[in-house]
Amino acid sequence: MEITEFFELSTGQWRSHHSDRYLAFAHLEQVLSSTDIEPQSVDKSAVVVEICMDKSRERYGY
Image (tube, rainbow, N blue to C red; front, side, top):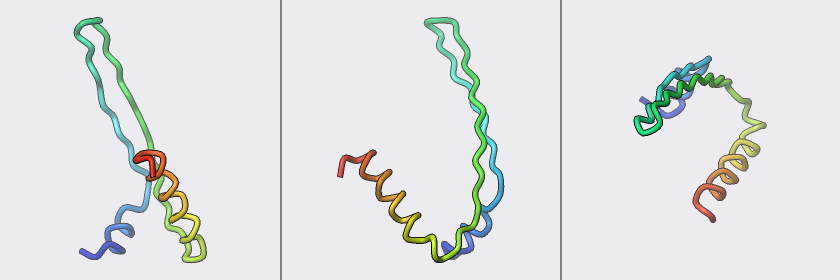
């Protein structure tokens, strides 16, 4: 599978649900999230690259 095909197949709305248990505090936390993946036009590719680079710098301290 080519990377472009992967992204084309990933387009749409994705939902996630997970639970965390804290036995020491007898606490249960449920997390629900939703992510929308939309195709972008080529003219926006520079903006997407810059956002990814900014996130990478935040995470890894570059």
